[in-house]
Length: 409
Image: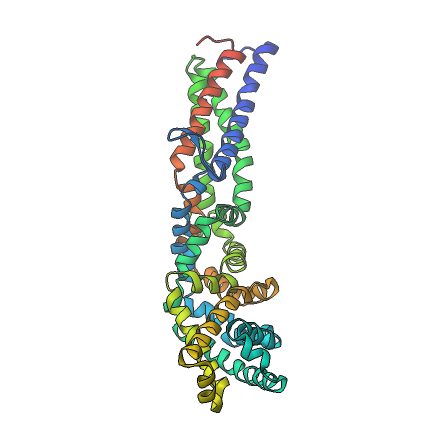
């Protein structure tokens, strides 16, 4: 039985229990979030004394999970390329480079055949410019159409996304943070009120069992429990479950449409851009096939431009010289290809087209598939975070027993 009136000191000691438990819950949840994302690089002495954020430390694995669980289900390479629209790509290339045809021709000819080109009449040069300008759009369209037909063998979508996310850890973290923004903002303050509720129970336990082990043990439970409860509120139950007038479902799962919009915007505007896709084709595992395809169409451009004058051109340049010219034009085309799609406005415009189809498919994922977007972020090494929270809670309880209640260790 409690006395009718408690001394002020004892009253303050009892009141401090739920307050300190609330602080323990808040701090352990805050620390769990920080340890999940930061630091980007290992800080400390490897391999034991130090820490690197869970996501940055396992960037390759996290990227694998993000791709396999979501992107792989949201569209094939050919579907993505179709949404970018090959016709629009061809028109864009022609629009960018047709006005510079004369400049390109001059550059190549002056480098390969300066004497011949300097002595060629201006009327002959203008005729060559016109023939190239007339032939180029048709051959660009033919090239893009052939790329479209074989795009699955020229570009590995999953590999490109994984490479981007592994190389750019800050982008990987941005993806998890923005998709789980509301859940992250829930986890930290939830530790406060969950800790306070645990603290009320702890106060009752302390009144019944005022032993030296009670506060440290309860601190351990608070540290463990606040993280565990918060994570389960976010991801459980998986499917909507109706209990009377209330429908229960994990907080993250309720936001599927909203998260789909955020995720697909980031993927299409930061990763699956035209610039990145073209760069992957030109420098990825299948770069030789892509470059051979471009060279084939460029050589056809040189042949078509020469037209009926091809025999005379071969006489003037020699068979090897004419072949070297084709190769030089091909090299120039590859160099141009690497910088053509740097226009951010064009990239954003095409990204919006890809985003629409990916968003529709992501919204249609089952809850089990959808939760894999964010769940691994917390699930990976989750036990470490919970144990760290428990350890801090135990130390806080020990400190409370020593400093607030005057106990001895």
